[in-house]
Amino acid sequence: MEMRKINKILVANRGEIAVRVMRTAKEMGIQTVAVYSEADRDSPHVHYADEAVCVGPPLSAESYLRGDKIIQICKDLQVDAIHPGYGFLSENARFARDVTDNGIIFIGPSPEAIEVMGDKLAAKNTVAEYDVPMVPGVNHAVTEVDEAAKIAEQIGYPVLIKASAGGGGKGMRVVEQPDDLEEQMKRAISEATSAFGDGSVFVEKFITSPRHIEIQVLGDQHGNLVYLFERECSIQRRHQKVIEEAPSSVLTPEKREAMGKAALGVAKSCNYYGAGTVEFIVDANLDFFFLEMNTRLQVEHPVTEEITGVDLVKEQIYVAEGRALSFAQEDLKIKGHAMEVRVYAEDPTNGFLPDIGRLQTYIRPQGPGVRVDDGFEQGMDIPIYYDPMISKLVTFGDNREMAIERMLRAIKEYRITGITTTLAFCAYVLKHEAFTSGNFDTKFVEKFFDPEELKKKDPEYEQIASALAAYLIDGRKTQTAVNGNGQLSKWKLRARN
Ligand code: ADP
Image (cartoon, rainbow, N blue to C red; front, side, top):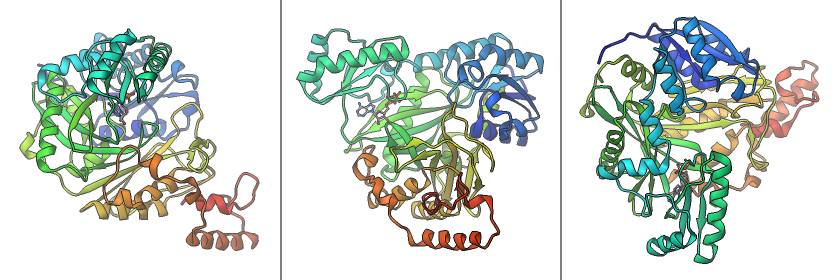
């Protein structure tokens, strides 16, 4: 394997992840190129890069997903490597192949690994020989209701019908009893056909009240593989993660090692190199089952960086250059505890509807143990075209309690006006007994979240609001505390904190 030094990287992404990747590149003395859509002309990732090129109109399909244009830009600007971030082209095997065919390094695994892990049935079959626990069920596509009924009878209800090509929770249907099987199966097939152009579905046991725990893996192109422990991502809303932490509060060292080894088995099965994540579902007995592998850098990677001291992007770049890993499994230790909350421009008191608009005030929290990965500045509009995530707020402490306390302090310090965010919702979760005790599962939000609680008056913010009102009535108006109509919105002030 020949070494190839990377001197210039193009980041085929936007927002916080583009900035995050460029930061590491800058530290490594690597030149950076940003691509942007017309909606992102003024974004921090564009200003942060050494060079920036517009790739097209706001719609992703016409800009961030235009692999052909992006490859051409690399050729024009003598770019050595492309970092795809997450989302967009990051798990597109064809793009990865085109990049390599054009003599450019793809910072990620091989196209073959992306391909096989992108298909749930192919992944199950590939992993089958590697001693990895699987959810009871079948490893082949099921088209006949009769066959599905037989399988369901064997594994026992409730069962889950899943689309092989699935992603983002689409094409998944829970079946509680035999009578519902036929209809749910038809629905899953039609949903999968329209969403992915592939109607293959399979049947597996539905694990009630599961936890979602995933293992970070890292491999080089010389066959070395390590795992960087777990991230607990059980706090989800409609199968989307909202709060992540590392380590998990329920794993024993033995269980951690068993899951780590299973994750390495998954990685080996597809000759994995680069950074990747093996997701497991964990039942009430702490038995774990392989769900899927994400062949890219994960949104929640910072919590792993905080507890291991490893810069995952730096390692991705080294691996892409052909270097061998500079550490072994024994060198890795967990130090402290990290939390991440995803801050979305959504209104938690109104069904989490996106609340797009202008960031009138945007002041980040600071101080010990606080990291903010974001892609916005005060005064910017949140574009309607992309994911409404504003930032990832990460805290680190000696232990879980400290990481939670720091997170609550950081949430209070965060000043955002002009739009509603999920910060208040995150604070609600962090203070809840089920969360602090560690005794929770993926149903937390369904079971415990009551939007009415957020609407209740919080004396602290009432005080701030009235002080601010007095200040404004004084005639010295500031933009920061007024809403679109130029009036002070007490509710908005409260909701943001
Ligand atoms: P997707 O690719 O659509 O995200 P996943 O297989 O990763 O699908 O599953 C997404 C989420 O659905 C998991 O995090 C978990 O909460 C739930 N889930 C998946 N499989 C099962 C199962 N067998 N039993 C219970 N819940 C499941």
